[in-house]
Amino acid sequence: MQVYVIDDEEVLRDSLSWLLESRDVKCDSFASGEAFIAALPALPQDLPSCIILDIRMGAGMSGIELFQRMPEIAHQWPVIFLSGHGDITLAVTAVKHGAFDFLEKPFADNQLVDRVLEALKLSKQRLSSFNQSEVIRDKLNLLSPRELDVMDGILSGQANRDIANDLGMAVRTVEVHRASIFKKMNVKGAVELINLLQVLEV
Image (tube, rainbow, N blue to C red):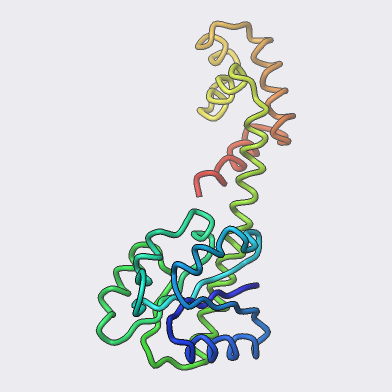
């Protein structure tokens, strides 16, 4: 598990790093959004992580601007905003647009750690779902265009004869495609196939 602290106040970065590492949570810090973006390609992408982000920073981009510019991979990492009293409206808006939470300064150490642990748990779930989706997409890529047509009929609950009529093929051909689809997708039947593909809709 990994936490990234992005704040232009060195004292706050150091105190948060100490607090989190005292709870056995690895922490790296960045003095600006630009520094984080520059480092992002080298950061481990398969590790449950979260970001603690100051909503306002003195120089360069603000926390909100960084949040809006984060590449897709960072969206697997929940963002906890740190906000001053005057930034509550901004923080609430950020949560509505996908941020995990915001904490108003000054915040209680235990409250922060609790939210970080919950964010890391969510990150783990997101990464697991993402990885599972990638495996399913790889399997779908093995299907031929005709098998995809047959699969559409299966997912619609059609019988083999109805699929054959719609696609202008013999029932036996549909049966062969159906068996091939189940084998490539590693499922035993239509119900398992439907349940498997629902993962992609989450």
